[in-house]
Length: 115
Image (cartoon, rainbow, N blue to C red; front, side, top):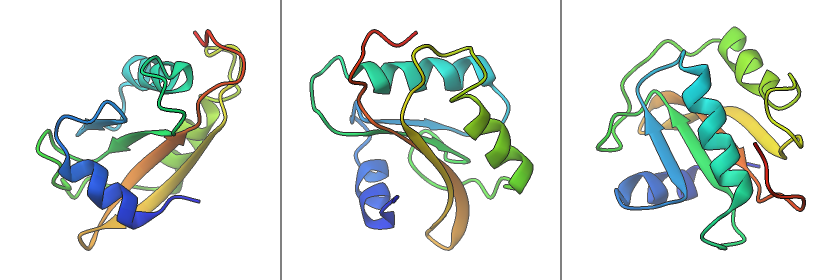
C-alpha cells in the first residue's frame, strides 16, 4: 500500500535517490529506466523507490489529468516484456496536497539485475 505521508516526506526531500519526479505522463522510456533503477536498488537501501508523475522538479503537484487509462499503461510496464525480470510494483492515484498525482512504488528485486 502506498502511504501518502511517506510520499509527502519523499517529495519534500529534493535529493532523495528513492524518488523520481516528472511532470510528464507519457515518457515510457524514462519510466521504464526509473522502474529498473529502483528495482536494482544500487544504493542498497532495501526500501522501495517511487516514480511520481504529475509532480514538478520542486515536488509540487502540477494538476495533470490523471485517468484510469494512464494507470493501466503504467501498470502494464511490469509485464509487457520490456523489463526483465518482472519488477514488483504498485501503481496508484494518490491525493497529494489536494491534487491527484500518480505514484509507482517499486520494490527492490530479489533477482537483479533488472533491465
